[in-house]
Amino acid sequence: MRARFFLIIGVLVLAMGACNLAHLPANVTGTPVIITDTPIPPEVVGNIPLPTPPDLQDASHPSLTNISFLDANNGWGIASNDSGYLLRTVDGGTTWLNATPPDLTGIGHSTTLSVLNVNTVWVLIPNVDYFTGKLYHTVDGGLTWTSVAVPFGGASIQFLDASTGRALADRGAGAGSDVVEMYQTSDSGTTWLSVFNNDPTRPDSSDSLPLSGIKNGMTFLVANTGWVTGTRPVDGEVYLFVTHDGGVSWAQQSIPLPTGYETYQYMPQAPVFFGSDGFLPLMIYLSSTTDFIFYTTHDGGATWTGNPMNANRLITPGHYAFADALHGWCWDGGINLYFTTDGAQTWGGMLTSLDLSERLSQIEFVPGTAGQFIGWALTSVDDAGHSQLYQTTDNGGSWVTLIP
Image: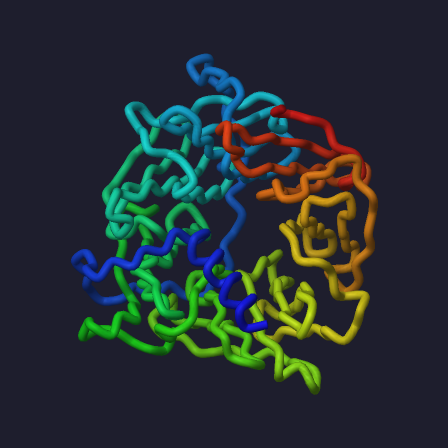
């Protein structure tokens, strides 16, 4: 059991691209800028697609490594072939347009994409040291870009609006520990302020988000309130930490576990929110099997509920996506696709027309029309340097090939 657990942790570390480098770049210092917990209003103007210019040329047969769809037509992607590309689509992924900034190379698996709306996107490109990087920003759908050097390279980044962003930077991992640093921006990413680090060699460090444990995700609901998830081999612990001051300090948040489940180990992943409704993906390592359950909240993450003893709430671990607060999917790439229509209270299964076993790397779903949902399935890049993209328009039952 524990050997299997550490094997999974090893895979997670590789997936995060963690580096075991001893020396850290210079810290950004200053007084933390704390923004009040005001819900972020929707950016109506930013979501109106701009006319697609003729100088955004088609990118034929891109090797996609990441996709992010906003609706049935508009999406963004990262491709790793050649020197890499930043791409957008306006027809649901049938064709992809090259929106790469001039002279930008080195785009690939380590590139981080943060999409706010159709036209507003940030792209983080790590430098070779992985501790610094360059952040690119567009507000016109990729027609023009600005760039700025940033004090992090491997990081989770999230923008809540056109100005407010957070970055959880990876500073090195090893022996079951993970050094991280939290940054804030309030000017669209032009400047970043370090507000937290847990590096014990630095005099300004804090252990409110512990050094121990491998961190695997970050989600902010509003400017001050966010979560970091991860895992460490401790029976009965759910590695879920919350901040209410923009990342300056953290506290472990408990979630209810049934009697008898204190002897198992857990791996939560970053929460997903739709307003005050949210989902906390939780992997449970039982004695001989691994189960997957989604804890839920209806009060903005103040409390989480779930019952791992309810078989209707347990599914096989896989890639997951939610289109809204009720409809979600989880798929390991095989012929059986799980879905929920009641906010993860129960899950059903369907047979699919597509088998991507051992190849599936990401799924996305968005609301369609007439009660249907549109989804995409992306495979990992194979040994020949290619990936495949598929689309469904009937909630996941049948799939068509967009990129063979």
